[in-house]
Image: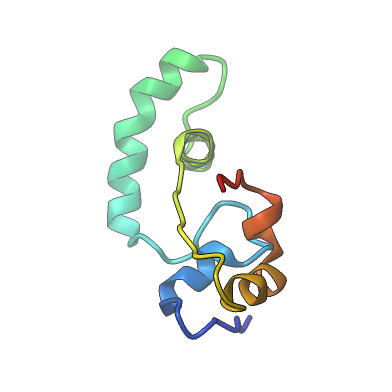
Length: 102
């Protein structure tokens, strides 16, 4: 999948701004770091969801759900000029899935 990026945005933001992403950025963390995260979140999942088996896939899904629920991002764009409207057209998720504080 190829993503077209506006000139002012760094390339790593493409994965975050792509509208078809489901909250997971593939390849963001190496496997050994994911294993540490999954092992660290095991007691939390056992406490909050004791009926769920603690397989790697369930632990990773639990971790992703917690990240989706708790991660908040602040993006600041100047509404002056045509760059803001161009970005809004290229990345409708920036406008549709957020709160705009004018």
